Length: 575
Image (cartoon, rainbow, N blue to C red; front, side, top):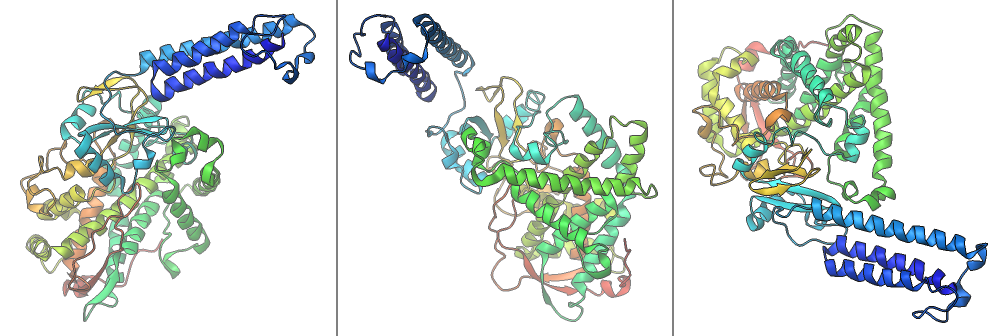
């Protein structure tokens, strides 16, 4: 009896060890070894009444006296044994039936971590290096999660045509759980009726041509403020300016004035509530620092259980503060129904369709605009100006187009952008070489599918390396050179240029972003002379992040052109 007590738990351990060996190594031998020895020990333990043949002298270490009779003990251990064997069998069958036979090629991995040790920043360059060795479709294990990385335009076409519905989901991440209202915003929501409703709202009520045109006055005023700020010390001679922060302030103020009629970046009378503005800036800074899927804790359950690094605690606190801030904006507008902001418009629709325009849905839409439409546009403007400073011939050609089409007596306006094809080509070429989201937004497969002949199981994360595709010499002539002329004959094939994503989950704000970029960049070229700070070219090193910022903030020398004297006054619209 005592021997029985020892061998049953020991057998359970070996059964479990065999299963773990199978999972870890995919080895039938390790599985059979663990199961076989474990079951032998289990059976040996049934020699009740005499010491077992395997472990004869262990009577003093057991605690059998806690049982009232042998039958209770037998029932408990037999049940445990059968449970372990049943679970092991089911797991084996599951692994054998669910593990695809032809996954994309993959580098050697480590236990538990998989390939997380290979995920060095910037990720798009690391993935490009791996694709040169393992092919344009390869797979990695990020902890327990399978990730497929695609760097081929032809495979991308397959992803977002034949497999567009299957790949329309988003992965569940800690950041989207806490910051995106438990994966319910338009960006983070799984594909389905809820997402379709959000997409409909954004297309009709936020990014439609009519709605975007309604806020043209805001964009005009914010661009005017930027030009005035640049002109203050550059009227007679060149002066050095730092553009990174100016572009960030521009895009945040445009979005927040559209959403809530408020400016949160600026000084003095330009910002009405300094404390509210400070809170907003701090929340946004933390949101960008903690969003995305670049933390190992996202993929290793053990790290999540112990909250390694305190990530979940930070996200929980940030989510509460962000929700309270956004709710405050909504409550403020509920108390004052007169206004032309986006919140006013959505609240008017809430009265007739409360289930479609709940406060949480409105907060989610605001959040998506802030996180998706500010940093990306500011980064693109910084890259565009950096390229122009390093290519003065392109800058000269763009200014000549503006002078010819707009004239030196008139300021450029946003409706002029379609008349400026070379300016648009500069933007396309900037987005090709320096896409703000080099890996796009991650997708998740809702079912098994195939990409390029490889099996992609359900719940696989898909990353599209747009940066690599945009620089593929098989797709583009002189792929790494900045040549806007390549786009002068019209917009490039959508499968080749994809800075805003592809398929049904592509960014719905592409048109709005193109307007903002074209108007701002054109105004800067039209109103100022630009030079580099020194003889050296602008440093084009990429920084880290889910977006692709410049590692070194852009500084340049600017001098106001005569056109500014005729048309720009110190008057701006105050909010």
